[in-house]
Length: 159
Ligand SMILES: [Zn+2]
Image 1 (cartoon, rainbow, N blue to C red):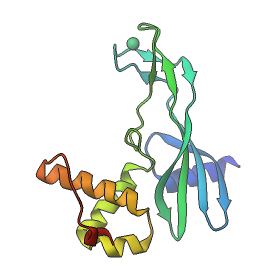
Image 2 (tube, rainbow, N blue to C red):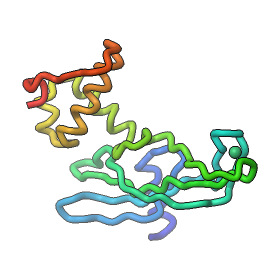
Image 3 (cartoon, rainbow, N blue to C red):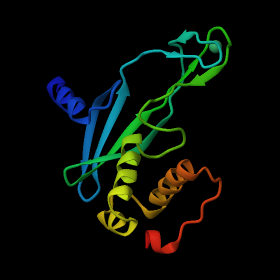
């Protein structure tokens, strides 16, 4: 990919701290953008020391907001660095995705916004995410609002 294309795609993606390194289009699936953190180092959460000693790469794919009518997936690398001081590895924190989530924060926010704007039935029809992802976020949102630990959703809310 030319450096001009990389620049355009990075601008279109508009995610802070990352750049697009390659893209693949799959008919009927969508676009997969391989992205990379601009930073070459990360801060150890134990002692606060900066480290650029790469320990391990951990690549996986998450879902992002669609681009027009196309689904967008991001192939990310959550790197592990080794702290020189603690002698232990730690995982870098990526601002745009929550731990153990398979979708970006901005996608989750969009879903929640859609719940507020309409109802679960019409959002599910739009097909941005599966009902499971949907339910997970609705629950999280309601938990925040009412502070209860267990939430049972009424079936009519998402069917
Ligand atoms: Zn450390």
